[in-house]
Image (cartoon, rainbow, N blue to C red):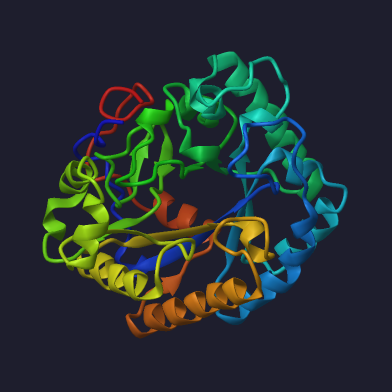
Length: 341
């Protein structure tokens, strides 16, 4: 994934201030270590969403639920999500897990688990089916998208724009999945930018430590050395910190927030997986103690954001602010970043 075109950065209005958003990858439960399967999954944790939603609401944090097909097709989903969205601040978006999303025309494989690797017509057919399922279940047509496994591809943005989407949030700044057949986001920044008529909100990744100016380039060079990133982190030289409670220690996350705000990131993009809201479904929340730590993480991060004057932003507020301004220069007419995704 090339860097965004010069001048495509979103120039947020001054009144928008510095804000943060939380996008929840709302997906089925499955064995993260097993091969991809069409049917080896469940959606039991959906019953935990209302209580979790209330805890975030108490912190003043609206959630945008990026829903995939098994969740949208769950018989209880409609009732639960209609209740959650009644707060007037939370929203629903779309997340494509191709291996569990009809139509099923592709063989199961690691490469095909990245939706952007599928033939354009098949990727679109899956997105059309998913968008319709979410609209039936929730009564809301989604306008925000995140590819499962961050698997955006060369035709994804054009397809999303044709289906009426406004926000794209599949790019994970600083990460790369090329060895698995997925995209490389090493050149993607944390700042929001315009691409193909959509606003890209990259998932925020911050480099901390004395060598943080080396960023993704230095981190990936260290990754070629045995235990390179771990040693650099323990020595306080360089750490890569994503804004998520999943496998990101609290102290590192707090420092990352301070760095991001200090570097002028106007919209911090946090995320986590919905199965982490109930113990036993993800590697990050295995038991009740892990779940307690999960919520302590959010309590502390929300407290720091408040002290720094960083307010939460709803999806509607993000779209409104983006509509109120223009990019800092021309964007690509091809629907891609720097000449094409």
